[in-house]
Every structure is written in C-alpha cells, then in structure tokens.
Image 1 (cartoon, rainbow over the protein chains, first blue to last red):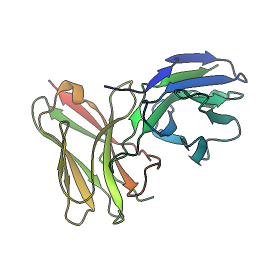
Image 2: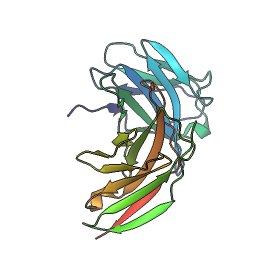
Image 3: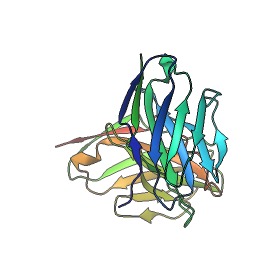
Length: 115
Length: 112
C-alpha cells in the first residue's frame, strides 16, 4: 500500500540553525500539507500546497518557514532560523482529487529538537 | 469553522464494541464529518467520513444523527491496537485542498 515517507525521523539542531524536513508524498497525489504537534498538544496545520503554490497557511507559518517541491517526488519544509519553540513533531500529508473523500494520508513524522 | 466536542477519554474492553460520540451542533449543510485517529508515536490516520447517511468500512462504522448535530464512531470489536486518540473533524464539501483542524480528540484505552 502506498505511503507517505519522511526523513529524517529525528533531527537535532541548535537554535538559529536552518533545517530542512523532507517528505515523499504518495506518487499520484496533488495536494500536500505540513502539520506540527508540540509534545502533549494538538496537531496544528501549517501550510497546504497545490500546483506549486501555497494554497493556505496558518499564522504559525511565518517568514521563517518555506515549502518547496523541488522535483516530482519530494516536498520539503524549511525553517530558516530555528527557535526553541519550533521543537515538535512535523507531519507531512498528501491527498488526491478522486472521489469526494479527499482523505489526507500522513507520514510518520519528523521529531525536531531545537537546543 | 464549525466546532466539534468530544469527551476527553473512554475505556473499553478488548473484543467489545466501542461507541465514540461527537457533538457538532453548528455543522453546516455542506460539512462532511471525518474521523481520524492517532496511534501512539504515529501520524494521524484516516478512519471514515460521512455526510448524512451512516457509513461502514473495514475499520469502523459512522452513525450520523438525523439532524446531523452529532455522530458516533463505532468500532465493532476493539483490539489493543485500537488504543489511540480519535478526532472528529468537520470538512467543507468543496474542501479538496482544505486543512484538517484537529481538536484534542478522545483518548481511547482498551483493556485486555
């Protein structure tokens, strides 16, 4: 069964450093998303992406964040200058347009630890 | 966005049915009711969705009240693997690209 994959599974970085989180969505999917979950808190939407453009972003997704689909398979989230409060699980998700369900398929997540 | 309300937690016994309730009294006519779950240390996982009629799939059943102001996710025979946080989420009909807005969900514990 196709699945969303994410790398790395765990990333440790120092405050102020840039990080890139990578995702490989399901191959025929057209819509891509990033969510994050701070330990013990709710899953929060960050950004959605379609046709090489951001469709929607939350107020969390400020100028420090960017997304890119550099080729036909990868979808990346970059944090330019990490802060302690960026420590969280980051989940990538994708969905297609067939049917009316549009369910989102999530990856296993990348745990980002900012020290 | 229309809100959903779920109990914080529920316990069940293995191999017994589980009914997880969700209230969504401000639901609009074009909102689908989606359920996702999150197993420990994993990403969320789609479970089921519906609009007006009850729905069944291999994972669960979804019972939707006639006025659509509440719904119930039914796991017919709970297993230990079903222990997770279950989220009831409303999504608009035309929301192919719409975000999922997660609440706190209901934490289901399953006793052996």
